[in-house]
Image 1 (cartoon, one colour):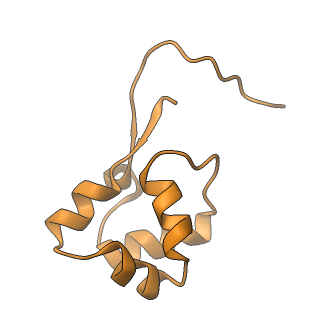
Image 2 (cartoon, one colour):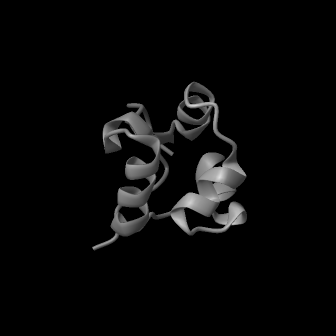
Image 3 (spheres, helix red, strand yellow):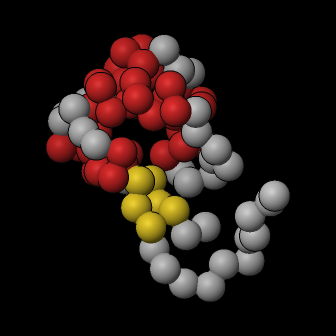
Length: 76
């Protein structure tokens, strides 16, 4: 996938655990783990907003685009 989640880096910089972030955001640790490992297929804007609020960051700090060939196509 061309979109990379940089949750590990942000958590390390803020010295915060995934469990603590999950409690603050109101999302399960399992769902945050899926996001962190890059296996998530989507993220709700409300979740992205809560993550940015608790990590004191912008969406671009959390998400990154890595150009290159992709086997996935956008659905209409």
